[in-house]
Structures are given as structure tokens and as C-alpha cells.
Length: 182
Image (tube, rainbow, N blue to C red; front, side):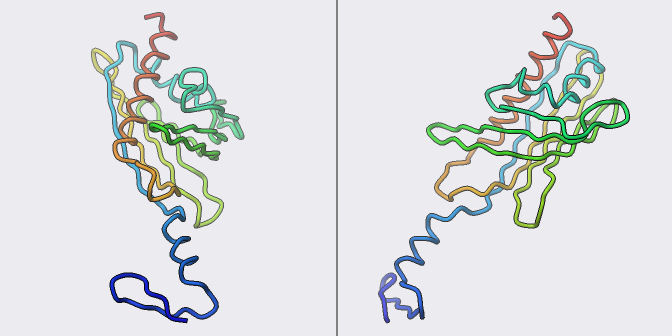
């Protein structure tokens, strides 16, 4: 069978109708990379800020718009979560997507909390969040987000990484202020 694909090109595929193969390839989800950063100075002691960011199971209390649930699957020697199942909701305009992730949590006092997706196999998507804190007159908090998401190529992702990072920084600042009585 010969089919016209575009301006004069033809193709012969055995066992598969060409229009079905083309339609599938256009609408299939692909791995898309997403990166975002944000930072803020929070007028609270570094230890207060670190405690809020290390308690990953409490993220739904202070950022429920994105972190819908966080279930502790394991705790480290200090009792802090070191493995959590998180349900994340990402919305950009009319497009929304939910992610159910298992995350490893690594805390390096006093300055870093890292969350990384625990993958079951090579086909799974990547998701890393790194919080960095620096002491000063106010505590400087930075967030670096990197993700590889399986989504349609038609889903607009431009600027969404920075938007998510900024939302996390803003919500974390408010949570620290509430905890510190500021």
C-alpha cells in the first residue's frame, strides 16, 4: 500500500495503516524537561526554616494547591521522613495533571533538603527538588526544581517550572512565618 504523507513523499508500511501510525505519533505523550528556580529571604532563624522544609509530610498543610497528599513510608534515625508518597497537582491555565510519586528525602543540616523520585524502572519520569538555606540577617531559601514529565507535546510548559518553584517558595515562607509567630 502506498500513501501520500506530505508534499510528494510516499511510504509503504507492512501491517499498519499509515494514518493510524501518524495520528498516534502526533498525540502520544513524550518526555518533556522542566526546570525552575526561585528564592526568597525569610525573616526567621535558619533552624525554623529547615524544620518546615524537612517535614515533607506537612507540605499539604501549607501548599495544598500543589501537594494534595504526602504519606510517610519511612523515617530516618532522627524521626524525620526519608521516604514519602506524594500526590502532586500541577495546573497551568486550562491544563491540569496529577502525579503520584514516591520520593526519597535527604536532609543535610543545616542547609539542604533534597527530594528525588524513586524510580521503579528506566521508563519512569524524573522529579528532583532541592531546597538550599543560607543563614544571614534573614534566612535565604532557594529552590531548584528539575523534572522530566511524560506529557503531550501540545501541553504548554513554558514558564511552569519557575511558576511552581515560586509558588513553593511563597508557601514555605508563609508556613515558616506562621510557625515562628511572625
